[in-house]
Image (cartoon, rainbow, N blue to C red; front, side, top):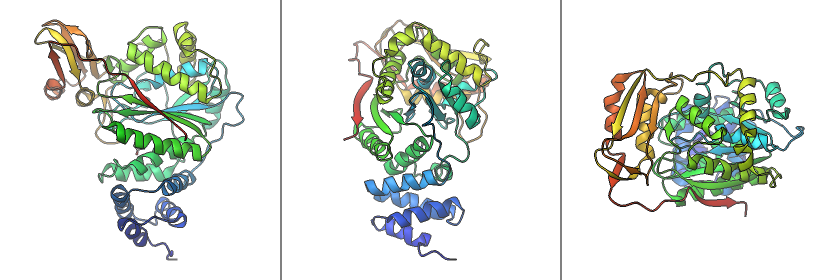
Length: 431
Ligand code: URA
């Protein structure tokens, strides 16, 4: 039967600047999920949405339709409040690794469905898969047991194929049609998965800067506002922090390198920026979960978060004591002159790590767990001519020349210190 909502009429309505009705949105998302709307038609609609935008009502309805294309999980019967965090992605962003067990150690349950990396930003699952034995696929019954267990309380795993399947298909099309950078499509894509995941509260870490999706504070604020509205309208307590992503987070970019750095943070050490952001996000998560009086900094310093990390890794088959994979080849970049490191670009470091084998260019490609970039200095540090600035790690040394070329303009050494930029740039809560 030919529907009254033919794909062409929906595409042309948006192409000409119209607002799609609830019925048009429900129909087109459902018909696309069933294969009745062809990939080329959905691609054309995605481009029309990118060019014309969507109203708040349209974004909310589109998100709802994507949630309803699959299964919605429900953790309301758990004995602890659920809260999750989502980051829009950055270089060296390993915050989920210490954060999930930390928030669990403070009394909340953290159900985190994560993804694999594509391009210059890494994926949380790729990082965790560098731990020998660790498995990303966790059946829902096991997720529930892990969340309810007071010694674990957190699970970081892959989303099942039945969670917002319309988004999975649409994201694959956007990736190859130049339609990723649409705020309504990014907001609905992220929030459909987070709402379907069944968390009662959510903290968003919206990255701003050259190494992020959102290059300006204005666009990051617009995306954060759209996502906070979507979460709030769906009954999920949602707040967003805008955080800087000009320079990589911490001192490593690459899967096993980032796990090792996260374990340092869980042991009470680690780079100051990782500790600061982990604690800031934990405070927001605990407040959203209704337990604002527990101090996450204390739980990080006294080893409680580490206990939850070890239990969480073990519950997913991993050995928290096992040696992590190490790349077979390294190459050191040294400072050409003495001075202050004034710049170290997230995008350059992320692309170099990717070229060294830490990331993938196409979905499903294998990655090297030991590959990546170690940073021995960060902006503001004093460096001396000849001292190591970066160590590049890879199993494929033929990648060194292109990675070195990528890094050539990614840093600068100057005579004067630059003023330290704040990490947390803003906070967006429901109006
Ligand atoms: N991450 C998502 O899940 N969806 C987007 O559209 C962009 C980033």
